[in-house]
Amino acid sequence: MLPCLSIRQPWASLILKAGKDIENRDWPTKRRGRVLIHASKGMTRDEHEDAIAFAVDAIRARPKADAKTTTLRELGFAFDDLQRGGIVGSVEIVDCVEFSDSPWFVGGYGFVLRDPRPLPFVPWKGALGFFGVPRAALVAATPDVI
Image (cartoon, rainbow, N blue to C red):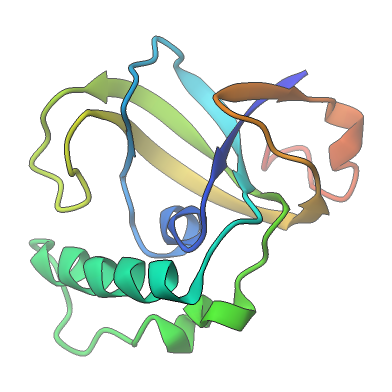
C-alpha cells in the first residue's frame, strides 16, 4: 500500500504546479517520504476564489517571483478545470514544523514538501488523515513517478 493524503482543491494542484511547499494541518506527523496526493471532491466556488487569492499573494511573496508570472487560471486553476475525487500526483514530505518562513504557512503544523510529481488522474475515494492506496490502482502512472 502507498500512503496517500487527501487535500482539497485548488491546494492539491498548487502543490503540484505552483510551488506550494507547505501543507497546513492542525495535527503533526512523523511520516517522511513520498506520499500520493488525493484531490478531494469538496470545493465551493467561494473556497476556490479565496484560495486563488491567497495563492497569488504567496507566489508574489517568494524571493524569486517573476513579475510576469502567468495567471493561475491560465495554468489550469480555473474552478471547472481542477480534477477532484482522485489521485493527482505525489510529493515528498521532508519535515513537519510549527513555524515556517514559507508564504504558504498559516499556522498549526506545516508538512514541508518537495519534489512534487503530477500523475495521470486516477479516480479514488479519499479519507481523513493518511490512508493506503494499493500500488495496482496506479497502473496508469509510470513507476518512476511513484
